Length: 102
Length: 229
Image (cartoon, rainbow over all chains, first blue to last red; front, side, top):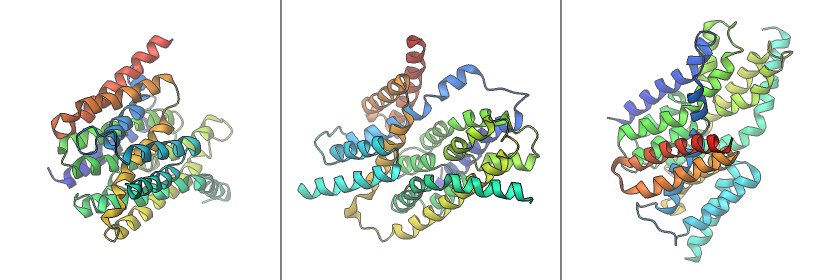
């Protein structure tokens, strides 16, 4: 399947999820088990993407790399400021520093 | 448009402006990394208005750009966006009187930020009437910011040298979103489980480890909530 196919399918599904209860509320409510599960979607998926990308960027676990301390610094910046921009700024600056130090 | 409505639009746009400081670099990074990802540029760029959800768009670039299967990219993005069901269910309680075209526009423009910034408005009964104008002011400002910054990122993308390792901005963005999303102990359990399972399952083909981590994390979060109450 092409990238276009992926993007159009996700686009339709995303609109449907945004629209369903705005359109149908009163007739259909959200089931409780679903509401409970949805609360943990963000932390689960985000960690499942971020952790391997930092610790095993090439599919092999590599703790000794500039990525790990750079991610810790970016993570601390996010934690203190709650800002994605700060995480990117500090994380990238740390990465360049650690790469330069070799 | 009457005066009161107009001022609510402006009020919404104004309230959202501090958040734009976080959205703008995210949009730039998405554009720059997507332009260099190997995913067809026009399709990746169009995702900004076809999908209009940063984390899901970025996950598609991450999965397809590193050789993952299309079905995994679709699954991951849909799971990431499933949180919109929650927002939709909450907003639906206050939108039943609106005309259909407004509901459609409202749904298309729904984002974490637009929902969060207007949610306290529609809980307040005195303000519920004007909340739809407030919401559109905020949501449309976010939409325009996203289109402009992602497009700027795509235009800049080609001129960013590889030695800048800008692809690392993708995990950094997800890490920042993660840290903001973890609010309590079950959330932390979900994140830890999701990360560890994805790492253990990293050898699975087509990035299926990501799917395994996501599902395990959600299950662990629900289980942890049940045990702690």
